[in-house]
Image (tube, rainbow, N blue to C red; front, side, top):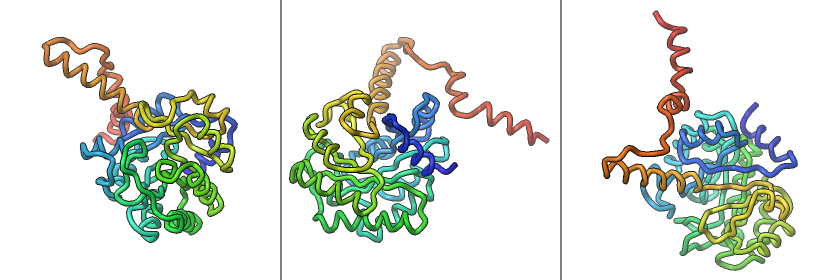
Length: 284
């Protein structure tokens, strides 16, 4: 079954989807092996891990698509891909959507920020006009309808710029145009989260960014409010960063690092057993 169809079936289930964020093939494989139904490749995490640079529009379409292709090839479950602004005008959006579908993504997110865009939980965000925002989503939907097997998330950052009324208006319009999922970024409290969920039809995604602008709620609470997807885009990166810092500190102090995984587990995760099996099959 193709990844987009797998995601459609997951969205038709009653339970909320808990979707950790990945930033490379290895982190995606860890998420899949832990039993989660899907992963989310976010622009922030990829920009930091691949370039060592902030999520301020510096990473390109080609770099994101390349990273996504490696991720999707490493796993068998659906992967969401951050398509940012589509990397240009409506024609660029169409190329981005088709490219992400060809890379193996089950879903792409297109947003209404101006370029260069910024992480939704940082300062300096600006949004394009309604007409341009709707044009981006229309271009994405048209590409899907023309044969790209991929779902569309319509994202709005309008709450930080023009308030909740504008954000809800845009999210509703995204659904009318044909987006499969909406994502209203950075509601500041549960009241705003309820306003969004109560007024916008269709599946909705919550973004659980630790120390961000939105309250961190349990998946069950998010489902009660009306969300269908709970994304954790930076949780693994934050955990890994803290663990690696402690490990580096121990090495510097000439101590044996603690809480390391087994080397055998790392080899298994990397795929050595499958490699050896195939190697033996074709051994001369």
